[in-house]
Length: 545
Image (cartoon, rainbow, N blue to C red; front, side, top):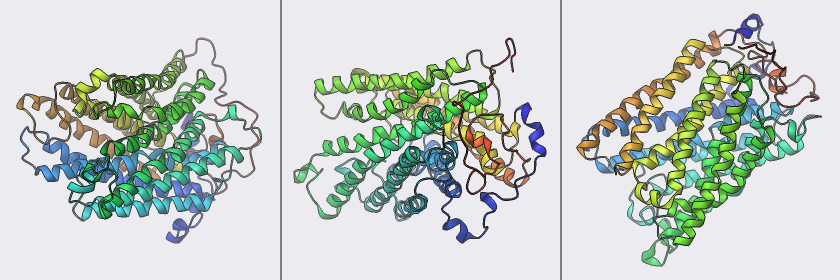
């Protein structure tokens, strides 16, 4: 932790807070406290992350040798499908909004809870019900369609558990819709006195934009999956060309949601990074209004770029040109954020605490992911690398390098507020380093393998690509250790960590003006906001650190 936190370690935990407001299982399962619901989500998404990670380990073990000699091709198809389904729908999409957003958004705006506490609890139960359907699909033989469920394979050819998996994701979608609805109403109606729109933390702006995508985009994929299940169960001719359907229609409907879903995953992480950069540099975020509106711009433009996933699916040259241009356009608001974070760090008193390490790592990895996204937005290059490991690497640099770096950075930054305890800083820095190094070693070689022509979703490949795959598999083992360490030391810190105090980072923001852990109602008295977001004291000229 920072040097300015030492004195706070001697402060005792508050006598009454949300963690000790009833210790029975019933008190947790029937809670309406947004903070407890956030912890329920934390436990759930961690569980599904581990399942998805276990499939990833098996994939990398298989790909360590050129021959498909560890598992059969059918089993390999199931492994990469279930890895994708678990990670995308049950970890990456809900992780930051459901955990950090649920916990922090009401506190950041001075509210006692989200607008609809019962709906908030209901969204967690819906998430769990959907997950049980999908887990049933896994244990009843698995799923082999790929996480994109492309038709007509998913509707006719596949003999695996497509229907329960599709129903699970359909049900899970309602959890996202309700969470987004709750966030929007809360931001509009429950801000503390003086908390104007342009005093909102950028974390709140990012979650507000994300909530818009959740409400507008999720119903599309939900009804698409319903049509898929209906066609598979009742043989309707919706997507199957053998009975008059159109498989490309499925791709349009699926990606109309699933590309905006990329922003459901990455926008909340961007909101986290804005907080980490401001807190780590002790400065107002450069161009606050530009960063705030760039979140809304990403949410809006993101709905018009889905077609770049279909450049090789029979799209006309003119449509491809339009989608290519808009795909380049959506990179501009993302670049605004990266440039403004960098400008914020310029001449700032940059800390080297664990959250800031994750923020710097995020900026590096997301920049690579974003730049390689421009390759896939250019029609000619996209045709060359479509369905290769280049796409896999790009997707993981954005989603894993972006979302998970933001998630881990946010967990470490607000862990003292969540638990009231500090974690071992040395171990946390080691984990951050392992994640960054392991991630690059895992996925950067995949850019090279993909450009050289290695198709994704194949469990055997030419001998000359083995070196790249061995590097990737070795990096995955380093990355796994980096992910496992926080689970261990954060759990340990809940009981044995030093007392954090209310503001161990010396940060500004309403969440740091209440106790750690916060009381059930967040504040003893409703706060009145009279300052702007990130109003840090002006540093003394010439002072560094």
